[in-house]
Length: 382
Ligand SMILES: NC(=O)c1ccc[n+]([C@@H]2O[C@H](COP(=O)([O-])OP(=O)(O)OC[C@H]3O[C@@H](n4cnc5c(N)ncnc54)[C@H](OP(=O)(O)O)[C@@H]3O)[C@@H](O)[C@H]2O)c1
Image (tube, rainbow, N blue to C red; front, top):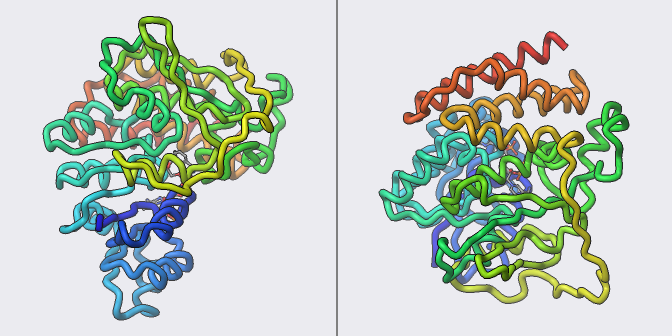
């Protein structure tokens, strides 16, 4: 029986994780759950999975939950997240808090020797060098939950990295694949949230529409697989059947396919190195008939170029890009800026950043805070 803590249990990944676990109750026990403020869904999860501890980031929401559930151990604030991430007896932490708030609890879980099923790509974008070196030092496994990285992880199993010529991440292209650059200026948050293949949280849905998500994934891949950025490519594949692929030095390409459903990579992250049965419906290629591919248009998706620039600048730049993007996405969702302004706010913020090494978590957090503030000013100026 493996004890699991889930950071972000009320989100799209968190709920899918609980669904995977509920099919394998003989193998996993949900020991702890952590959320921001959605205590109504958390209450249902407490009733069903009976964790030893839960944490609610928002103090007022934690207080409301405590009043209704006096017998449950309820922690709160950022310390509550860290306590859940480092809880004694937990073997695997599912890191699924959206965005920068996921970094510190994930890093603390690693320091406490927990294996990580990693959905929170922003932790690697902000501080990949710190996170991976800490994992190496503690002998901790970081198993990707992102479908693309799970695919690459599966394609690389048993391979020597010297034999890898290129990792190719696939991208659906999001809901605006067929729209022109001109048409993108007037798209609404509701349209941007309407992803054709995946049902995800709001932030990653917008990131998928701008392709910033793919850029974040390029940075995530750079750290997870310890591979130079020149060896990471992106290709548009609207059907989301091939989740990513690896080209080897002999020209051979190994790709991983399945129906698009996050329960696949989540299940593999939890069961690795085993595979569970009955996770996904069978893939029927005869029914799908067509798998298509095209190169992304950088004029249409400037966010993708920004992420390569950020990686090349190094140090705190990827963290700054990530923070500015979080603010710009929020501003777009609350209709303060247009869709095309998202990348503009990010690039304006990056242009003003003086890169620091980012060798400490304090430096990373301070760069992130600076970028959030500066990006907020760009939003207000709009
Ligand atoms: N969704 C997918 O299919 C998918 C696929 C690949 C990777 N990912 C990655 O997985 C992560 C989660 O994505 P998602 O789509 O599941 O997001 P989501 O549906 O928006 O859920 C986010 C979760 O994080 C919690 N949270 C947010 N801020 C927090 C804070 N300050 N402290 C503690 N908890 C906090 C939320 O709690 P409340 O509910 O209380 O707000 C919720 O449980 C992201 O990094 C995303 O890029 C997602």
